[in-house]
Amino acid sequence: MSIGYITHQHCQLHEMGSYHPEQPARLSAINDRLIATGLDMVLRQYDALPADKAQLLAAHDAAYVDMVFRKSPEHGRVALDEDTSMNPFSLQAARLAAGAVIQGVDMVMAGELDQVFCGVRPPGHHAERDKAMGFCLFNSIAVGAYHALNHHGLDRVAIVDFDVHHGNGTEDIVKGDERILFCSSFQHPYYPHSGHDCEASNVANLPLPAGCGGDDYRAAVTEQWLPRLAEFAPQLIFISAGFDGHQADPLADFNLVDEDFAWITRRLCEQAEQSAQGRIVSSLEGGYDLHALARCVEAHLKAMLGES
Image (cartoon, rainbow, N blue to C red; front, side, top):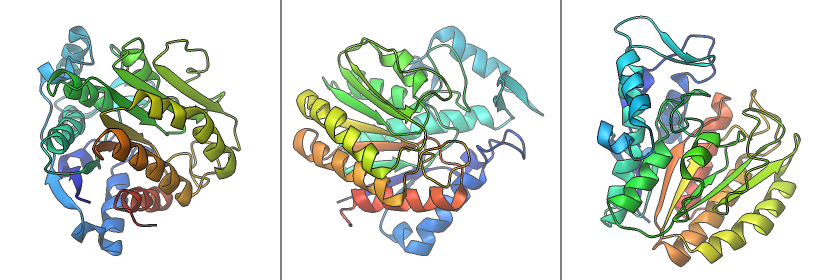
């Protein structure tokens, strides 16, 4: 199994304040863990390339993209919403995050890699078609999904979002597009207070209560997601890989552990082998306890590699 790791040092320059949980140290913790476990010697590593405006427009309104480019500051910070801001490096970091997913799609479609993990920030799944929110500027996974459909001519792709917060931005962008099956599990009720009432036929939301542990999570995924994925038979699987459902995470109230993230990764790899020639592109979303985040990324990658 050939696994790519796409990242860029510029993603660590995006910074929204020392108080902010979505901090550059998240990528440092992941990189340190890859070195400590020897995974850095196993993964094929690449620098991300930035998405251009035309690629971003596959998922976002032109006026919104223009606004983000226009507001990029030369110094200091500018707020896009109450918890999302830009410093002088944020625009390039967000373009690199989206570009990494596009790059991953191109590489798995060319057969250069079997699967890809994008260790990038800022995250993307809260960014709606015309709005930044929840630490997110551009919806990297949605941009990548439309690149797979429009550039590579695929008929069916799935986006699986196991971040503890509902992927409202991804849902806003893809709902009603029957070429995309969107599956999002999340704590409910909780930020961003959405997803429990979506009736789009291509959306399979999985709202779960605070305190949800591994047994209940696995049962819900097995009952509600795996049959939908098997029936849909995606030709490429995207993962919005948020690890903030971990019991150590300070921003939510799930009780998942490292092995739960390995378990769902293995299930998605099994589906990818059945319908997608093994192809998966995964991109980092949430996860704010640094030690738990690093371990969960390790578990995620080892599951892709077929390690138990």
